[in-house]
Image (cartoon, rainbow, N blue to C red; front, side):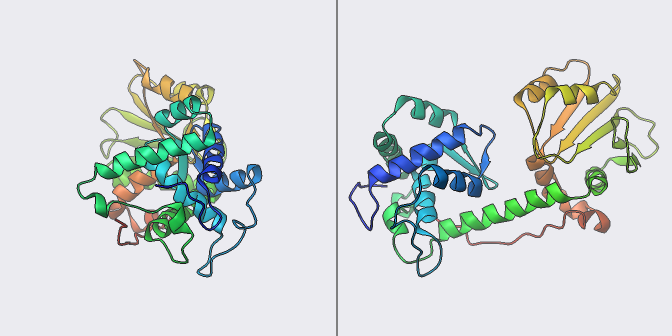
Amino acid sequence: MTNGKKKAGVTRQRVGKLMRTLFEILLEHPDGIQAQLALAKLEQRVPPTEHESGHYQSGGRRYEKIVRFSTVDLVKAGWMLKDKGLWSATETGQEAFAAIQDPTAFYKRACELYQVWKSAQPDPTDAETETVEDAEVEQTSPTQTFEQAEENAWNEIWDYLQRIDPYNLQKLVAGLLEAMGYHVSWIAPPGKDGGMDVLAWTDPLGTKPPRIKVQVKRRKDAIAVDELRSFMAVLSDNDVGLFVTTGRFTKDAHDEARLQERRKITLIDRERLVELWIQYMDRLSEDARQLLPLRPIYFLAPS
């Protein structure tokens, strides 16, 4: 964003209000929030104007497109992250939000930092230059199309993992371990598991330590430290524990796992689970691959 002129119903003051309110929402979700949910919450707090309620002939509401274009400045300023369909505020962004109370000044500073980023590119003329004014043009933006396609893809993956049968999720994790070179000797049958869902070893006969005990949870919320400690209670000194969830872990849970001196515990949240699945996809058995059937689609990356 390089100017504050009113053009097609958009002003820097208006965008400043949108961006600062969006940041309030991001700060309420320190672990990130799905982009579409963030946009829905923003619309509740800052309803669209008559102009923003309209649609482009090429499709899409002005309101969402204006917001998406405006976040480019925040991302390039280092204040905001977009990753796997999730939007979150960086520590630098949190500091800026606390220091700059006026919405217009808040957004103006992001625009200035965007220009600093742009001038630092090897060829500034080739750097991304989309602005809110560009959003008012009746055309499709390659960058925004790519961003939304990526968001939709990750949202579908997250939704799939939240609906997967819990026993199939255990088999999915077991299949991943086998693709990584481990030897799975047991998968808990449906029902109570006694705190362990998968048992694996580093050798085929299970004669060499460590023994790998796995807890698998299909969850939307974050696994807290108390639940982690319950799993750790089933680990002996010669065991390695893997706690896998389709949700996330709280900060306290991460701290607990990191500070362990005797017990070895690794936390695998949904992002890490999918990253490992993609990394070892070529080594998965055909049956395992069908439990999370991903297929890459290639885009010509925007400049």
